[in-house]
Length: 216
Image 1 (cartoon, rainbow, N blue to C red):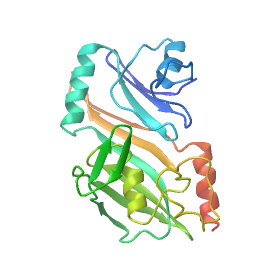
Image 2: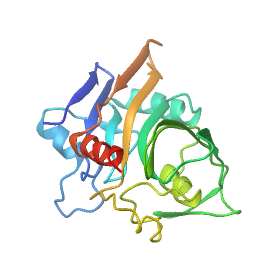
Image 3: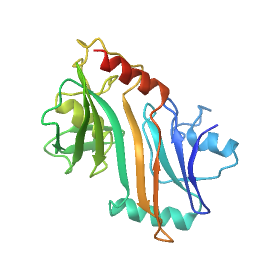
Image 4: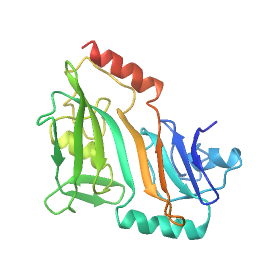
């Protein structure tokens, strides 16, 4: 069962497990979050996505009017998305922003002076022997933004294979997937204006990874 974090007649927020697509990419029968929710009797309309490897809070609309309203909130950047991440090395300064422009090219993205303005705000939660646990707020929402920015800053996320280019190979710390979790989601309800805020607990695999990181 996919855990439900919030449900009302217009919105559904769920806790996506790692390894599951948010929406189907191809008509090949591969499991995806939308399909799994349909099996649970939840008919939803996607408004934002997480990478296959990333776990945590995903927001859906339950009707077309809400989808349109939510898309407006995302364009206005009023939906606050906070992530937990484990980055390689000692991140310095401890709190700050990464502002590398990102060029999106179809399903790929890269850091480029030709790219769009991109801002990732981070805060150190815990400095560990060979890594840093971070709380991350997305100020902009480019493709793979956190993963790209962390790698370009010299601190690829533990388990990063797409953008690390071998930078994490000296680390003894290993993860089968990227150490990134959509931790908190906060928005004003598009119809009532009430604040909707949820938190997705760190899943077992990342909790165990954090414990190993604490031991060095």
